[in-house]
Length: 336
Image (cartoon, helix red, strand yellow):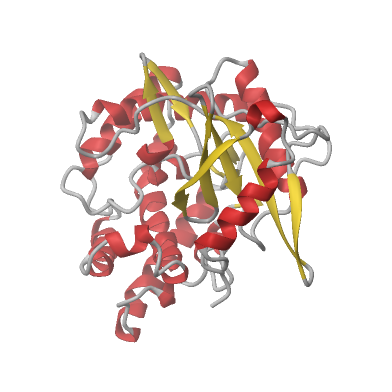
């Protein structure tokens, strides 16, 4: 396995690291720390004495380098200047937004403290129009990406067919997904061959491929007083814009309402900018590619809360999606 599972530190060690990092910020930003999420990184809420909150992110090792995190923050700065509600990093007493803490023996962790963003996280149980809001804000991000002049030294992770689903993919190997048997490999391999052919033909023109969020699903969307706010840009990088359509239904591509959600996403997106027939046609391919990428993620994150919550049928449902895609190129979704 070539991808590490989130972070190798236990919760107590991460808590100590977060507490040490917090001491480097001004007194007004000191507060009570509580772990709220572990996935690629560990995220803590900082409860301040005045009742306000902050979010402290402890990066796992061997995923993003310091300059890549600085690049993420640069995009967030540029997005906020256009009025898009995204996280804002705070500075330490030394004026740094990304601090690096040594753990000894050459190991270290990067830490960023963000202002808290208020809002309610929608779920698949809410009105499907939430997906329209998600599509609309995604289109605004893509418009900004296409016209933004990246600063010198800007560097982010690359999401292409090989780095998502190849043998050395960023999230590991799809073959390592728990419950996926060797006899099941041929159908996934055939699916990936078709995906590769279609994406090679689709290409990477500047109108189709650029800086994307790459994990823009409902869990990374907050709704607050009529505003739509986007969080967790940790995976942002260079990828196909329509990959964000696939990411919108991550882990639930097999759900009976998946087609409806995609249709609402597209309606919201096209309220901001139109999509070509080629872009619409490639979405099922993006969806099945994403699902196989998630097989790899589950394989390298098998003991995480998210992976365990998927249930015993998730891998079997993934294979059914592959079969439907090979039969119809629609991935069981009626995309229009």
